[in-house]
Length: 146
Image 1: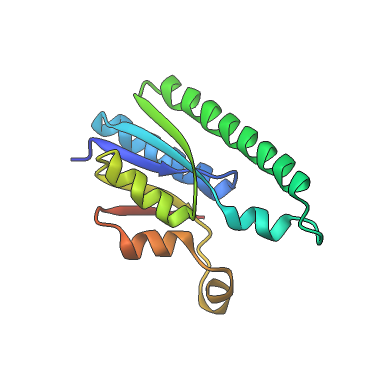
Image 2: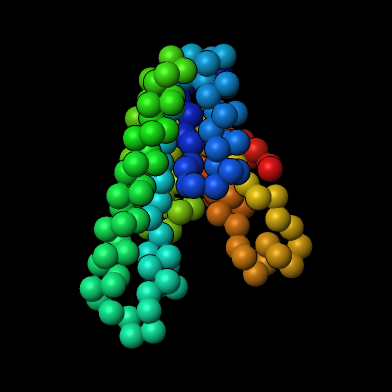
């Protein structure tokens, strides 16, 4: 069965639902959990002001990094509180690529993600990290649709 589960984190309720599922599964099979949060450079590009001010982007990056660190620390404490071993990381990059790379580097044998469950034209325009991970993953992926 599964011994090392990667959980993709963000601040969404869908991510929290995926985490709940991963914790329950990890407890049942005595697995280790690796948490990963990706800081997507596209987030900065789309949220910078019109002038593209470097100082604004640096401040925003600092805020995003601090929020990401707090998210993984809080979540790690929750996983430890459930009696599980946990590793956690925050990495820069495109989320799907970060998730897949971290899963391989950490020798995970399952990826668990929450997903919005978008479909049709909405998924086409919004894109889907979960779909990209599912399509490219060399290991099983468990999606918790919310």
